[in-house]
Each structure stands twice: as structure tokens, then as C-alpha cells.
Image (tube, rainbow, N blue to C red; front, side, top):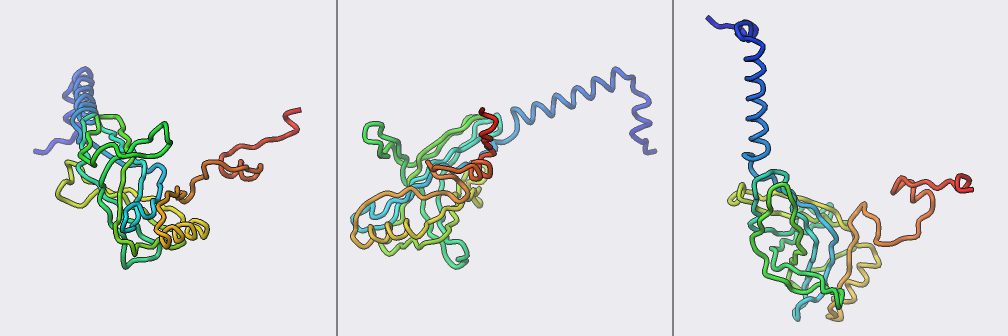
Length: 226
């Protein structure tokens, strides 16, 4: 004979129901805070493009990446790669494995070598940030003007042998940036350009009232200041 939940509860005292409910809540809390597998996501920072970083030419990409672990258990980022594809091009993309970590030299204000790219441990409920260097040695690699989709692929312990986790952003190479990159490519001059991410504000800009309101929600009413 199958009893309904209502019938079963009718045999239990209020104190027993409260105790069972508290126990279930405790088990749920324990799982969510201590037993749940690491949950690692990635967040892009700035992206810099290096033209002719090598004597044979090629393109290097240096990007700030923050790995965020939302679980209590420590997680591990085993490896990462970058795919650069022009928006609308479904035929090909430039694939680059991470090669090294860089750091900012406070004296020269330039990014310099810190260490070879290696496995990263991300403690529970915390973040870790690295300046990651990717490169593509082919001197024929040409970045044309347009919007590019940048996809960071990274493997953790949970998907070490499967498909990677992915985080994407878009960057814009306008006519001015394209002209500079091409000049560097043709003259074999090594140089660095910071490429703006789509939808993000530049590092500095004089903004009028409409731009301040639309971008930042700031509105200045001069009459209120009198």
C-alpha cells in the first residue's frame, strides 16, 4: 500500500519534521560549501597585440586573465589556449597555446617575462590573475580591420580529457590600428598596441553630458550646483 507524503507526515510530530528539515538543510549547505566540485570561470582584462615579436615576424597576444573559483574546493587550470577569429569568418581561426606568464616592470612600465606557462591552482572561493602570453609565429599572419572574436579555452581537472571551458570577448581593430600594424609588419618593426575590447570605454576620453549619462549613468545638472 502506497502512502502519500501527507499521510506519512501525519504520523510525525512537529519536532521530528523540524529536525528532519534542519538535517536536509545542513546536508545541502555542506554540499554547496565544501563538497561541490570547483567551479572555475575566466574573465578577460586588457589585450595587447605585439607585431614582429620574433625575428621571423609573427603576432603575439598578451592578455590579463582572472580565473574565478566560486566553489570552496581548490580547482586547477591545467592549460589554456587562445583562438582569434574575425567576426563572420566561419572557415578559419588562429589557434595559440599559452607560452608564458608576464609581469609589469614598474621601472620601465613594460611587460617582461616572469615564468613559463604552467598549471595554476585556484583556491576555493577566490581568484587568481595572470598576464598570459600567446603567440603565432607565421609572418604571414595579417590582422585586418574589423571585429575579432577572442575565445579563451581552458582545461581543468574536471574536463582534462574533454572539450575545454570557453570564455569569449570581442576586440576592434579600426582603420588607424590596422594601418599601424601593417606598417610594423612591412618594416619588420617590433611594437605593441593595446586593442580595445568591444563595448568597453577607452582608458581616457573627454566626455560630454550625453556620453556620461549613456555610458556611466552620470548626469550633471548645472542649475543644481548653484
